[in-house]
Image (cartoon, rainbow, N blue to C red; front, side, top):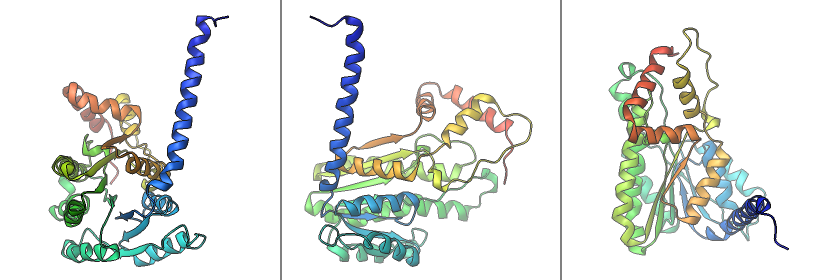
Length: 310
């Protein structure tokens, strides 16, 4: 006896959902074995997302090289990773001081990273510096500092580690960027400019190194919840409703654990580009390409109707 047609569609949906769930569970289980023994560099391991990444990759048996600007925080992370770890299944992480705002030290950092294991399998560039201010209030020195941390630092480190990857014909370079590398919003000119530059650099790098078997990935996400201050209530006049809604969605952010899981999945599946954002920012990306005057008008209206708290 055949099933009625009205039952078939819900049944197919349930089956598809079940297959998708099983697939994700299998991939999550396999992720531990896929990174085992891989040398993984995390440039800002002491940040929220960096710490989550460190725990994920450490449990998976990766040989971690953890970087950060604070030695005390790196040692604290080291202790949290090794305190309950099985030395037969995991490797004790290596620690390296890395400060992208000090470009003069970058050559020494590259040499120190390579001394740890002699090579790098996965480079995760997740360092970032944020700024919210009107353009006329931002000095050239601040602009340069943001460009060093968000663009010149990651690009220099990638260039420094690239020769060993080319010689081994393998490697994965992953840039944790921002959706503002593809869509700029007001009062974040320096930040958006640095992210646009980084996006362009790694897009070019992806095409140039593909012949060597090297994968280059970018993850464009909205703001990370853990690093954002609570929103400040602004006085009248009431903001433009559409502009305010878009701005709230743009800054809604993602949790560090969600971003870390996405990084792990991107490394395992060798995906080249990921957008980790809610529907409204995604729609705004399409509007930027298809109806730019409309998007510009909405953003300008939001600026006129809002009061920037310095």
